[in-house]
Length: 123
Image: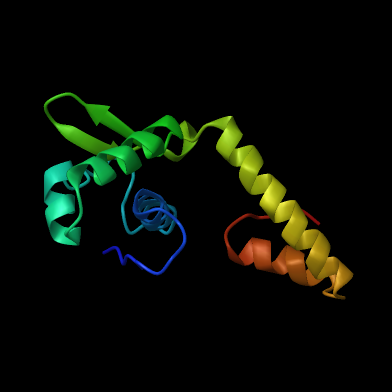
């Protein structure tokens, strides 16, 4: 499910958070699906439960998860992701697109890549 790289400069909780976010974005974890408990995931990954809790809290603050007391954490609807995170992603996208255009990649190629992702970018 998640792979941790202890040589990675990023903290473990960020690796967990990024891995879970990737699983949600790619549809491996579906909207409304219950995530493993903090204790269960910590045992699976052989890390401290506080690390998992921190990742879950961060994902919840970004709108990727929601918690139900006594029930657990669940993948949030896609509309739940906060505006700040979307703006961060647009910034990364804009930088990447600008660099690709600078490197000579035609705009039509970028457009078709976005369409292939399901973006339906208009002509």
